[in-house]
Every structure is written in C-alpha cells, then in structure tokens.
Image (cartoon, rainbow over all chains, first blue to last red; front, side, top):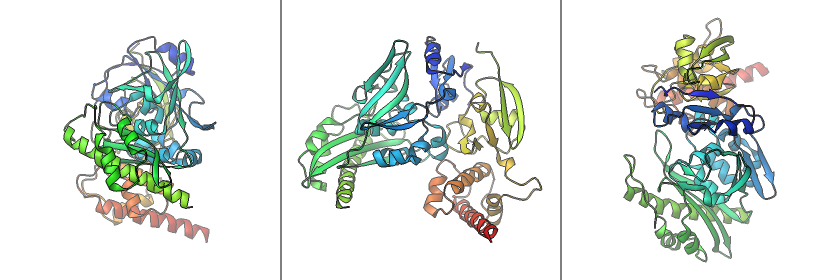
Length: 290
Length: 167
C-alpha cells in the first residue's frame, strides 16, 4: 500500500529530465496510473521518480500533415474531448473513453500507456491499428520509432534507457475507412482481457485493406498480419470474416492468469476480431452512405 | 537523497496548507493523516475502489494514485468541502439522504465526488451514463440501485435550481 522510499524530481525541461535518467534506477512519472499502482504493491521500486508533469508545453494535440501529434502529458480526458481527435481519428477518442474509469482518465496519459506497454492496455492496440511513430528524446538527440517496431515484449519497448517519449504521431484515420475498438474487460479494473482495434477500408463491397491491433492476449500488443492479409478481398460478412480471423493467435504466446486462461483469451481474440472487423466495415459503409 | 523531504503547498476546501512531505506520501494519506480530513477513505490497494476520490484542480481523481508532491500548488476539494459553511447539504448529498443512497457509508464520499464530476460534465445523464460515470467507484453494500437513484435525483435538483435562478 505504501511505496518503498524514493527520491523525487520535477524538472522544468525535457533536457533536464533526460539528464536525471543517468541514474539507471530512475523512472519517469507522467499520469502515474500504471506506475504508482505497481509501486504501491512494491512490484516496482525505482530509487528516483522523474516527474515530467511540470514541463511546460507537453500537453497538446496537433494536426500535422496527415498525422496527429499528441504530446507526452496529454491526458485521456483531453483526447476524448478533442474535436481534432474526434474528426481525424474518432476511434482514438472512442478507445480513450474505454480506458479504466473517469478518475483514471483524468490523470492517465496516452503516451504513458505506450511507454509502459502493459500487455492488457487498450491504447497500444489502437496505436498499432492506426499506425505511426513515437518521437523519442534522448541524450543524443531525437529519433522517430515506428510503432510496428515499438512494442518489443511484456512491459518492454524499443526505448533506450535514457530516452523519453516527447510525442506520439498517429496516422489519421483514412477517410475511406471505418474503425472500432472492442474489448472484453475485467469488471473492476476495466483492463482488457482481450481488446481488438480494427481499421477497415472497403472497395466495391469487399475489404480493400485491414489494419488490426490486438491487446490482452499476448505478452505485448500486436498486429495479426496473417489475418490482415486473409481479409483482403473478402466480403465483410460473418462467415468470410470468421474464417479469415482463425489465425489471430497463431505464433502468439497466449497469456493466462486468474482472470482468463489462454484458451479463453484465444477464443475471445477470435470472437472480438471478427466482431471488430464487421463493425468497422459497417461504420465505413454507413459513412459512405452519407 | 531518498530521505529528502519536499515542501508542498496545497489549497484544500479553501484553506492553504504548507507541509514537508516524503515523496512517497500518497495524497490520500496527506489529506487524512496530515490534514485530519478523514472523510476521504482508503478502500483498496489496487486503485479500483474510488473511495479516495477528491477533486484536484477541478477534476475528480483517485487520491490514492496521486503523490502529495504531485499536488504541490494544487486546488483540492474533499467531501468536507461540499456542504455549505452553514451546514446546508450540497444537492448531491441531499439526494443521497432522500434516496437512501448509502448503507455503511464507506464508498459514499467517493461516490458523491464522482457524481459531482459526472453532473458537471453531463447535467442530464441517462441511467446508463450514470452507471458508466461511476465505473471508478465500487460499493459492496447497496448493489448501486439507490446510488444511481441519488445521482438522477441530484441531476434534477441541480437543473431545477438553475432553472429557478433563471426566473
């Protein structure tokens, strides 16, 4: 219930924060709603917390040439209420509204969710389905890391030890695509036992492209490439899609815990991926009809 | 460096407090133990139950998942800040009284603060919207039924009071 002792710093700039990360036991805190619960159970015991919450100009949502740039301190509630997000990537606003509960959404950050890479977190699946990159700032300057390379393993990303994400850059939802995020959640924590984000484009009644992000199933969020490929050219109806999503957990180390065993998660993955693809296709068809 | 205390200043229910705190002091423990405001409760160790909910810079948060040092220079309202100085109950509190919205009362402060947030965001919620707005607050006694009734009653009161002020 009480974290182990630690030192605390609230730097005034990202450069200062990066400097403080030369302590290998230091952790960044932003919204703190993944890190503090772990520290309270003493699953994490950093010796130094570097709070980036006092750094000015890190909370922003900006359109940028076909991308949405979302700054590190942007909270979920800001993403939900943003007309920019509602127009450019409505599935992101919708998914952000599914995270945790209202109090969690008051503090938690989208970028923090990506950096933490919880295997059951919602937003990594959405980020993968939309595509884009994170902009990481480190002692040697800044670099962009493609989201497809970003999630490496459970709670492990491609960030180097002394890097901090400044912003995430998400591709806007293509105007000819429908998208949805569906999850089957644990009722108290609202974590995804399985969550699927599907971004589907139709052409002449069949699926022209599919991008899918799956969370809660494996040690990290992932794109089921075999399913994405199998969907192309299929009609967006149940029997074809059910068949195409059969391989959604192929090659994945499906997780089990007290909330759901691996067989159940694999089952949920098949069911939710099918439903998400059909719903996304339905939304696309509805939009076009307007 | 780990033993270094930090000075924080917070405004709680309209009163300024300055204290020296350990970085690991949770805001809920600061409020309860250092300020003596024990209306805010600790009900779990997993950030799920919401009994610790307070308003921080205008938005309802789980104070067990905020460090006191993160609240430096913040404006906080706890359950003690809801009734008027004369003791007149806030409309949400009044609704809980009238609709029997509590049994043991342990979740109630958090519920009231969360409902206040919900109604500020959505002054005329449906029952479904009320239940979603209370996703972050658990109750072991009531089955939520009268809590939802209290929220809906409070929303009517708040809209009714505003309407009568307009006349």
